[in-house]
Length: 279
Image 1 (cartoon, helix red, strand yellow):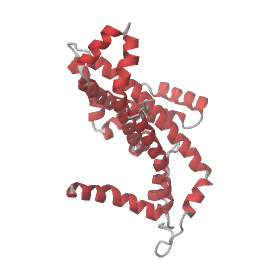
Image 2 (cartoon, one colour):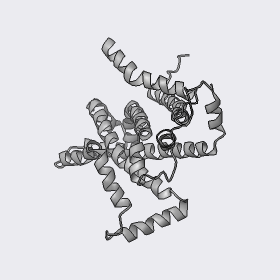
Image 3 (cartoon, one colour):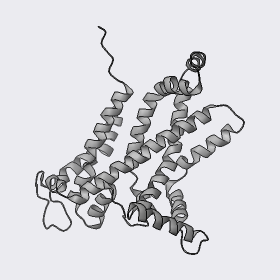
Image 4 (spheres, one colour):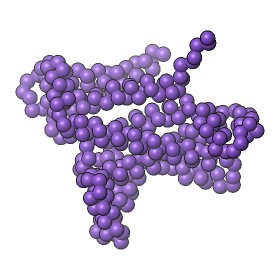
């Protein structure tokens, strides 16, 4: 276990610890001299910043929308792929490609499709759609929708493959018994399939959270390098890389840790609910 432990400590624990430390200082490229310890001053300043609360609300909405859509899409595709058929291998390949293909290439294709230049034949139609969406929901709504759609398209395929493996791991006898004991397919899905998939769905939801949190590159490229709608990852990037305010960037990056820990605790309770004590 020692090599693996050293790898985890070096790759994960040390950067996280360093980020926590600089969040307690005034570390910045604009400050002269060595960083000075300021305690929780950066966190108190963060709580009074209205831009932070707006970015936090946008980030939570982005997490919720993409996760629920990927889970619903993944369950549906996994059930379709679990049924034997002639074209099953081709459908599996089509579902697997969005996740396996390099994201840097596909995000450029999505950017050209959703934000085409004037030389394309459908640029007028997409421009009208963009103005309609932004006019209805506010500035940045179209950019938010485009990033969410790309994340759902890419992550839904991974969720489908993950849940398909979970379905194949469940003994087929359970589904055969359920076919005899239930009245219709919907009752079998609600009372048998979903409870059996619950542990795998909980893990898929947490993986969706982590991938959505690390979606900074897609947000950056799909918006053309402009942060039209703020999420905490892009805010941290602008503060740290562009402005040199590393301490404030670390505070914004760490502000999502309590939310992720809370989500992990809830998912573990969903994964392994407490058993009722016998009377």
